[in-house]
Image (cartoon, rainbow, N blue to C red; front, side, top):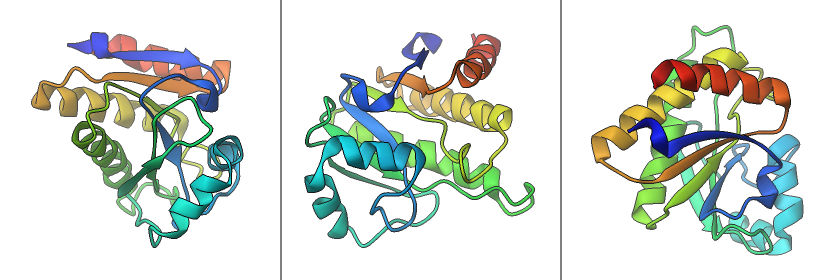
Length: 171
């Protein structure tokens, strides 16, 4: 069932998929990295909708429209800040992927693109984050018998290589 997961090096804001995932901060009001890029590309309507959501807890996810993005939805999730691995970071990161996929299924999403959640300014080790992402997505979609197409959208070639090597181990 691994054929539903692929790796792509691209700007997530340009993808024509049903949903893109925003690695957001708890306010959901924009920030740096992928969060800022998504807010800039989507336009002010995204910020206006996010203001109504009352933020988001770490590990949770919320869904909005995508406005000026080619996607239909933005699924916002707040990943954990890396604190050495002894503060439930792995479980919280896995919860991000599970909760995003649950929202995707509830909204009949057929394709979703994930960035490397928590691997930027939150400093989660990239290889470990990729392993959690691939394992969690594989286990969740296999258990749900879902045909959602999942793209791991990597901004850099280095990140794409990490995801490709992790994905190769699960096939």
